[in-house]
Length: 125
Image (cartoon, one colour):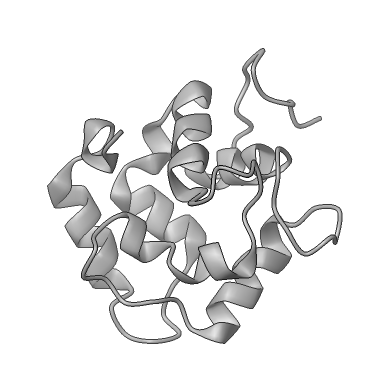
């Protein structure tokens, strides 16, 4: 899968431009600008798998550091503070990695604060 299979290259470029400087990455803004906010629940899962470099079913800080590079290989790495903030926001159980529960958090971010409803994802109450 290529990320441009589900997102416009122009939208990705615009989202990356908004956070090109260190410590300017804002997840919800990035997800909205890139078009992730328009994705279905199954597409959210596909993006999670795409970001999961080792296909372990979990994202750790090392994988999150390269989050932007999954959208464009020449993009910058997230700073340590951005990586830790993203981990803290998405690591619902505090185990230092993001697993299936990320689909809930990312789903809400992707959809501008609205829950993603899908039989393939845990739904937010």
